[in-house]
Length: 119
Image (cartoon, rainbow, N blue to C red; front, side):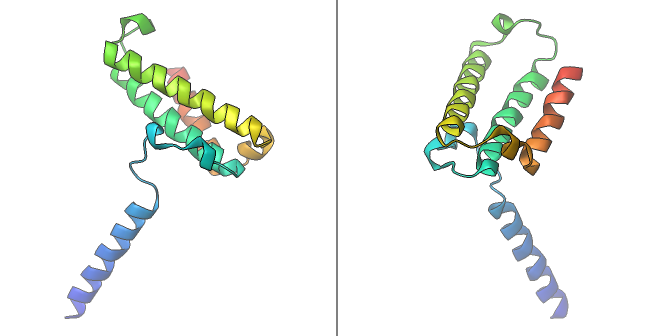
């Protein structure tokens, strides 16, 4: 009985952890009008950068964006548009870049961008 309680506890904890962390959120799901705090903007930017990295990783041999598949070109265009929406919303909300840079998501995003630059 004690083992069952421990197993159920672990399962409940794991399900809470994976559902509460915004796992699976896509750039298309970001509602820029709901972004208010500096770290909201950093979180949104991180989602966009992670999706962009997936495309970059899947197309390591491609030298020019024109050589991407039509589907990937459309994804890149949508991600660039979303990044611009986030930047415009941040400016409109008068959230300073310095405040965004203090967020953990921004620091993670910087690491990902550095990795993409090295590749």
